[in-house]
Image 1 (cartoon, rainbow, N blue to C red):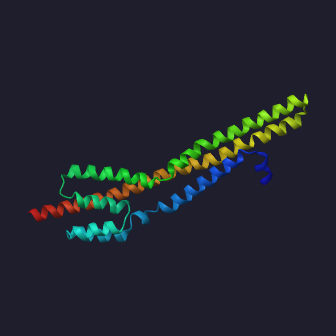
Image 2 (cartoon, helix red, strand yellow):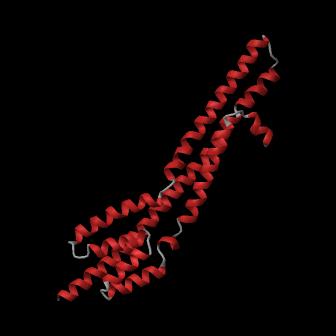
Image 3 (spheres, rainbow, N blue to C red):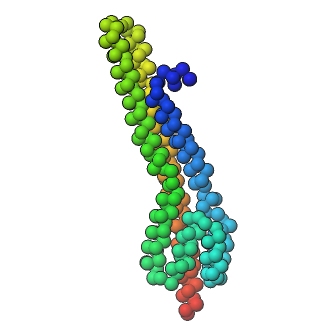
Length: 206
């Protein structure tokens, strides 16, 4: 494997760095994007109880002490609980879009790896082919076996770039979908709490 990497030439160095970056992002996002991390049942239970009891001050303080997408949305709900329902829903959607960017942190960089790895691989192949044909022109004649070996060596970087990019592409799509699903779950739970708050306000007015 080491000999294979050496044969690929200097372009293998940035390709290796891209693979490390991709792995770091993938493992970090897989570890981070866990439902229990962002939609903790204990937090949901505490906030549901506080909002059902219309203890908005304690609920807001709890959200400040437990930062995260869910508590941020609930905090927005508490601050704007007297707004018209449609306006409140728009505020929650705007806050949700901002939180989605937080959930997708690192994915733009992973997308860059997906695009850059094949291009770097192609660059390495082009440079390798130039080197092969330079050798042919200098020697005046070359055996087929030598030419084939040179071309095979030049193609190593293209193969490496694709090996990096293809799994990263599928994992990027999966992580993006996972972030979307997680945010939808958080928003759905927040809307349930919004109905609870609105119902509580209507009962108090009645």
